[in-house]
Image 1 (cartoon, rainbow, N blue to C red):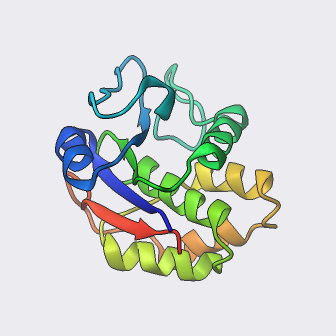
Image 2: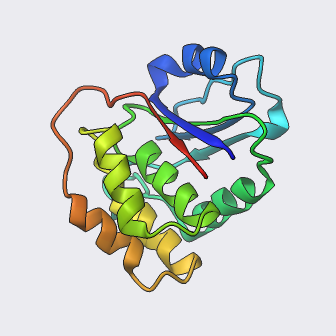
Amino acid sequence: MGRIHVCPLAHVARVARDSGARTLVSLLTPPAVAPRPATIAPENHLALSFADLTAPRDGLMPASERQMAEFLTFLARWDRTAPLLIHCYAGVSRSPAAAFIALCALTNHDERAIASKLRRLSPSATPNRHMAALADTLLSRQGRMVAALDGIGRGADCFEGEIFCMETA
């Protein structure tokens, strides 16, 4: 069984320390640089740079299919003996989407059940639909991932998302 912790950028060091995470995924808009706590080896840190968008805008690019494929490959290497920590800037859109994608990729759970659990754990989460659509295609989910996120709708307005943890069991 593995645990996936999700948090905003401001809490990465504390959550990594408190959770015992040894694997980290950073999802930040360029030119932001992802921090890597000393407890996480460089080879266990995936830093992807893309904006929290669904289409290009003002010189900013959303996630690409290549980046989502890289994320899925990185997830497949995670041994699940120590927690995985996923963060973005606010912990509202990109990192909850990545946690949702991870659970869809690593478990046999129904997409709607995963999305519902995500909503219970993080009332403010508004998972990035574009990331989910790319992963949905890569995982051959025939639109079920996107439909599941549409089913939970937009999260509550906030400045920063909740810190939460999801189990892969």
